[in-house]
Image 1 (cartoon, rainbow, N blue to C red):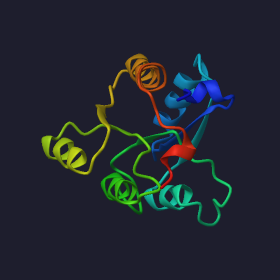
Image 2: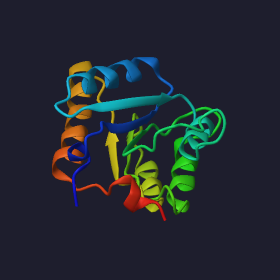
Image 3: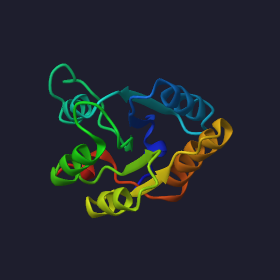
Image 4: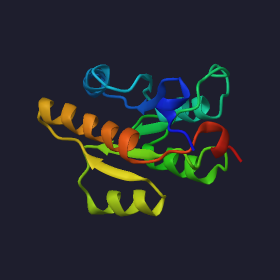
Length: 154
């Protein structure tokens, strides 16, 4: 099985985040990546679900290889979005990494009960935030073997 970066296309990230500062920091962290990537950003759960399902106005949306998800979102929170993703046979194999400010034990347990792949608490320090995003990228793109999009659609 080929790795994503070996098939000649950029890695597709979907960031679901409503905080413009965290969006900018994530963009900055991924900009200097050793792996070619595209970052799509949506600020609420409903838009993200439409994007993932390629519903209007996202009919031509790329299928993400990795989803970076905040829990506290408008319209549909991250927990509800996560439950939709993991219940959908066409989406459930996409790795979802929760990146949130919540350290609450009930949030951690609930998201793992919903089959999140990873739960990360956002550091408040800007440099640490960038390092965390870069560590997530390194782990998921150089250590973990991800399914190619064709193999993950049921």
